[in-house]
Length: 291
Image (cartoon, rainbow, N blue to C red; front, side):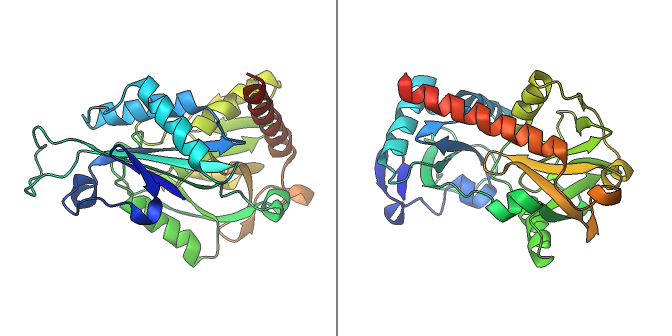
């Protein structure tokens, strides 16, 4: 695995960051994860625009121009020995000589990147769906920023691990927010529904693609508040992210998702839109090879 730290490429085992780094001491940083297929960064520009929003949201200057980022990303992808990758980018406020909660002055940011093989859901998960649990959403008020302050997300994710499940679906004040590391969609009477973008959910890149593809393929869709009761009465539930893509949930809190003979099975809308997603993704990858 290849890493990049403050201007240098190196094997990740050689990467070193100061223990005084504010990312380590205060979770004072932002990050982004870009899926890479066939060495093509899928929706790379959209990911980097979201990264800029996160940096702006915590008043952290961007250490590179868009062109500089493109060059660094191109190089680290090329350095990796695998075609399909997940590229992690993180910027923190840097390492100050004193531990003070106030922002330091004239301290250079810490820039860290690494690539790893793409972690894809298995064929069995795609075919049969996955099990999830629900839990209260106890995170801070700016879930729309992709920051490294992920303790509450980690706690929620561990709840699903403890239960032998794939993800934790979070509920706040009686309404669906998102998963610990994913957005959440439901389907009811053929309509694709997801919570609206606000400070309570991360504006997912895959979330946007799902709505784009639903509109393109004539699938009714709407972003609106979704009650906890609607989640449990859904015909289909999905979790979406850059690495999961569209992954059906067929069991929630130990009970099958859906109704009648379709309960506990991957639904037709998930199948249709995941095929559309794969076709869209593969077309972009093929076009990049011919560019």
